[in-house]
Image 1 (tube, rainbow, N blue to C red):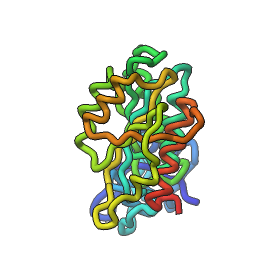
Image 2 (image 1 turned 45 degrees about the horizontal axis):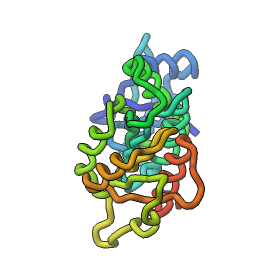
Image 3 (image 1 turned 180 degrees about the horizontal axis):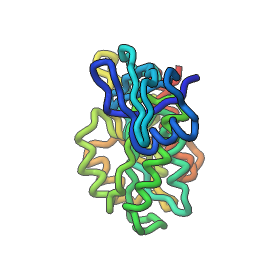
Image 4 (image 1 turned 180 degrees about the vertical axis):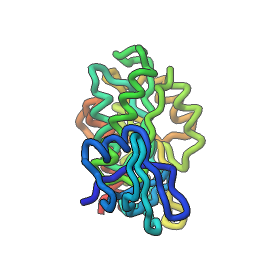
Amino acid sequence: MPHRYFTTEIGNGTAVLTGADAHHLADVMRGRVGDTVLLCDANAVEYTGTITAIQPGRVEFTVTEGLPSAAEPDVEVTLYAGYPKQGKLEEIIRHSVELGVHRVVPFFSRYCVAAPKKEETKNERYTRIAAEAAKQCGRGILPQVSLPLTDFSAVCRELPDYDLALFFYECGGVPLRSLLPGDPAHPPRRIALITGSEGGFSAEEAAAAAAAGARTVGLGPRILRCETAPLAVLAAVMTLTGNLE
């Protein structure tokens, strides 16, 4: 399978790759003029690119007509993940990208064990992890990893932007299958999933989520770890919306 790279410099039958990806293709993979790769733009469109020129830090291509990426779900899912401790967020990001997440938004809440520390620097690493996972699993976009929201009220303020917001509460709620796939005539296309940190959610946070329009959902009789719950709910949502078929 051809190697996959992302670039926004595509148009009029040509494309350009620069920076670290150009170095990887030219120097690590030893790309040569005439070799082909897969190029993805920012809109889930894929192109077959044929190398026409290699310069230091720059690779040029001719490209075929773009085709929609078959790997992208037909729902745009944002995962709001309570900030875990000890590097677990890296695992959440990596596997959620494989499962089709569009954006990951960490957040701090009342019972978070972790505390904010050098988040701008960490975000650079998280963004690289998401990009590596996207390339490895054949995604058509680079999912975004946002800087963490400082409290749960900031999460609630974003919820009206979604067709459906699902608050996964350790104290229980309605079954997920009762909410998805939803109305066949108007299925939700922008979905927010909200899962907690090691300490879970306070009753006040659960009430705030409901007041902001989120549906409170249970995950059965077992308590899932904070790094397990996001992946379980994301896999379930993708299954119920037909995106794991």
